Image (tube, rainbow, N blue to C red):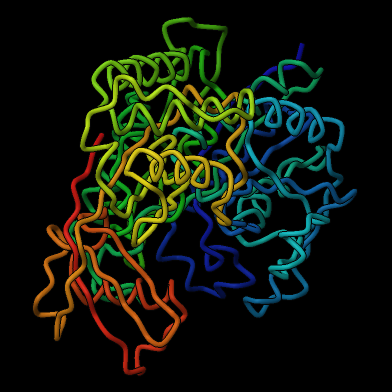
Length: 469
C-alpha cells in the first residue's frame, strides 16, 4: 500500500531563484533558508513521486487539471532566465488512479488534451508555481517522478474532497509520495505591491499560518471568499487540496518560517504524516453536517420549494411529471405570475431558470416547468444527475408585476429586481443576490445577460418578488 510521507507548503516567488533574482533574492533570505531546509528534508525522505499543486497551472474554471504528458518540463524564460530548465517523468499510473477516484466523486477534470483546455489555449508547460519549489528540491534530490496539478474554482469543500481522492489513490498504489502545496499568501501586505494594501492581508496570513500550525482545517474551509479576495491570497486552494490528501491521518505540522518581503506573504511549512486517525476524518464530518442541514431544510421547506424539488426529482428519476395538486394552496392554483427556480449545491449556484411573465395557467405549473428547465436546461451547467438530488438546495421566486422606472436611482438591490429591455432583447436580475451591492452592478449584469450594450438606449423596469425557501 502506498503512503504520503509528508506534505509541504512552499512559496513560489521566481525572484528567490538566483538566476532570476541576481542578488535581489537576499530580501527573502529567511524564506530561501527555510525552502532549502525543506528540500533537504525531502531528500532524506527519498520519495518515489512528488505531487505539486500549483495555483499558476492551467486553472480551468470548474475543472481540476492533471497533466498526462509523459514528461513535464518548463523554464524560467518569462523571468529572463531561459537557460534554467527542469524536466521530470510523469507518474502516469498514479495520475490515472487519481482520475478514477475523482470521477467516482463527480469531480470534473481536464488534461492537456481536454476540449476546454484547448479552447482556452492553455499551455501544459510547468508554471513558476511548480518550477520554483522544484528548482530547490532538484538541487538535493534527482531521482523522482512528478505529478503536476492545478486546482479549480470550485467550493473549498470540493477542493478538500479532491485532495481526499488524491490521498485514496496514493493508498491504492505502491508509491511513497510527498505532496507540495505551492502557495504564496497575501499579495496585499503593504501599498508597494501591484495589488495595493488591504488590512485583510495580514489578518489572512496570520489566520492561515495559525490554522496550519494547529491543524485547524475547518477554519480554512469556512473562510469567506470575499475576505480571501480582499486579502489578495494566492495559494489557499492549493493548501486545501493538500490538506484533503491527508484527511483521516495523524499529522504533526511545523512552520519553518513566515515573512512578508515585497509586500507578499511567504510561509514555509512541513506536515509529517503518520498512521490513520479516525478523529481526523474531517471530510466525513463535513458531509454528515451538510446532510443534517439539508434534512432540516427539507423538513421546513415551503410548498413552493417542495413542488419544485419533487418535480425535478420525479423527472430525473422516472422522466415523469408530478400530477398530485391536492395539497397545494389556492393561490398557487388560481394565480398567474412569472417564476424563477434556483438550485444551489455546496453553496454554489447549480442552476437558475425562470420566466419574466407567466407562460402557464397558474403558479404551480410555472414552478414545475421551470424546475425541470433549471435542473436540465441551464446552459451553464450539466443536467442534474440522480446522485446529486440529495445534495441540492432550492429556492423559488414569484415575481410581482414589473413597473417602468426612469433611472437606476429608483432601484434598491435588496428590494427590487431589474429588467432591461432594448427592442426584442431583455435581461432580468433578481433582487438580493450575494455579491451584488449597487444598482449599477445589478443593471450591468442584466445588460450583459441580455447582450445589450451599456451605451444603448435601453429601458428599465423594476419588480418585487416573494422568495420561498
